[in-house]
Image 1: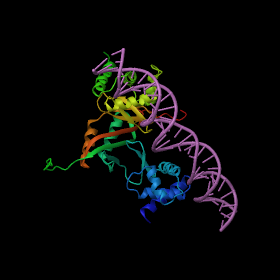
Image 2: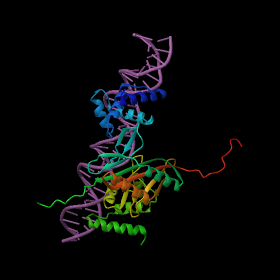
Image 3: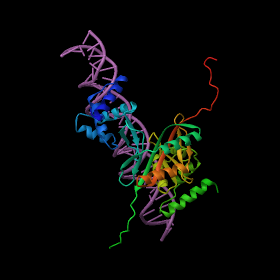
Image 4: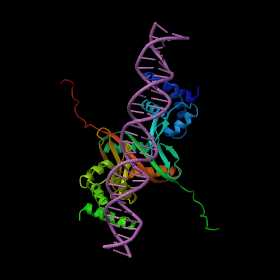
Length: 151
Length: 151
DNA sequence: GGCCCATAAGAAAATCATTCTCATTTGCAA
DNA sequence: TTGCAAATGAGAATGATTTTCTTATGGGCC
């Protein structure tokens, strides 16, 4: 059984537990998400899934994302453009660094920063429930001889 | 000259330098922002300003926010609901903690976290351009004798 | 295997923040 | 003052997301 199939089976049992159905559409969308190694938005997911089932509608993608999110099967992020992007959630917690030039999204995690956030919240009298941390950066050039103009 | 008037004067000279005009509407909106101690959205700013000038339109608020932002006079934030909120920018950098129960926004700053973010970006080969950090927390109850049920 | 019906899907309309268009007004420099 | 580019007001347009409404279907039960 592939990792993807395992994820689908887990989700199916979660749905069953909640009295919800495993439909063809949900299975398809889940498969698309499981196979994605990026952070697609609703339209991107729709496009990929539509290739396998041209009767699928965008509404169903949005609805399914809600179900998946409420079951904890995916995570939703909205970076600077405000559009919701999704990724499957069966992995450890991480934050994101976005390349401001290419838009590429790089995942990272840091126990130090997690701990620091918890401490800051505590100092303000709060218990940390969740957080959002996005770094926006530009690729560093490796040190090298500067190119001469019209060499 | 009040702090608000000083901010308005500074902004006026910034505009002049950019070949833009200081209009009644911009003056009014800037005043509303300078007097705000919260993080209002466009509609909130419009409502407050409208009380002083009922000819103001919401479009002008949005347009003005763009000008103000491009001049560095305000900062725009979008928390979890995706709606843009604004605050005047002539203060040191800070991040936000949002009370998940009340929606209250608390500002904080931490050199340690700034430095840590810079280091994390560097380790990934990036130069940090900017970041977004939001903590979502719940107020801690002060320790006390637990209330007995039907005491 | 077929039935029942609550849940889900498809299609399109509705929503809501934000942006754009366009006709009119207004800073402000000469 | 005058001229005109920049700005405004009002409303239409946009675009992501949600909702409505009618039809289809998953899956427990016989």
